[in-house]
Length: 284
Ligand SMILES: Nc1ncnc2c1ncn2[C@@H]1O[C@H](COP(=O)(O)OP(=O)(O)OP(=O)(O)O)[C@@H](O)[C@H]1O
Image (cartoon, rainbow, N blue to C red):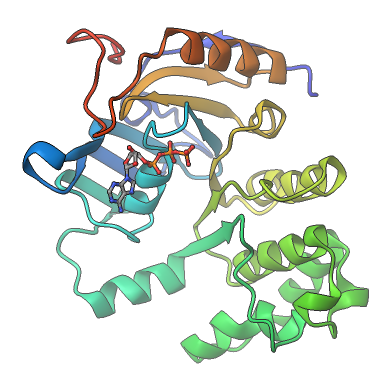
């Protein structure tokens, strides 16, 4: 657990970006609504979410199950479309992009680390790490590749296939794959969900280093307060809305907010309809 200053804020980050390292917005969502289905069976996964992610910043998204965390991440990463509102990666709006342009943007500017690792079983660790560069027809930056794999401690495992690696090693390979292409922004959907605490710590440390040493932007979804305590800020969703944000919290701070959210959440009914009073849980 890291001893960090705790201060709540409810201020929209896009409006308060300071000058310097964090001034540039790497990604943002503006009034994003995501509804699955329609009519009586419509599920309101996101109900007007606005948030910005500064370049070089590590953000963790938390919230009760079904609060919309994965949906928000998938919309931000262009893996899903929004029903209303806009998403930008850097200054590129995703709404107007063709499938081809979207694929190129994801390939060039976004890295992914998922809970299920998504490694190709027939390829070695090294082949998995360099696969996206190969598909893009780009040369692998070898000095950078060396830096990343040494930082992750996976050099001795480069010739092994995923089945010959532990969960933690597979996740580090997935991290290396995300880092080697030098994407502007890395999205992690429960990147430590399948890992023991030691491997979790290693993966979180490299994601932390991605921001501190490599000036990349990291956004993860997690249920783990300890994982969230590695972030610069933690954003809490409930019922498809941002309801709270902590700056540089400790794991205990995060745990406390999660406990209150879980306690106070009548949440959603089976169709994702809010059962809260109108106006509750809004960002001021
Ligand atoms: N493809 C889909 N079709 C219909 N409903 C969906 C779909 N994906 C998500 N949902 C619904 O949208 C809501 C938000 O889901 P989401 O997966 O974003 O929540 P989450 O906070 O990531 O949950 P968890 O922590 O359990 O993974 C839930 O009610 C979920 O059932």
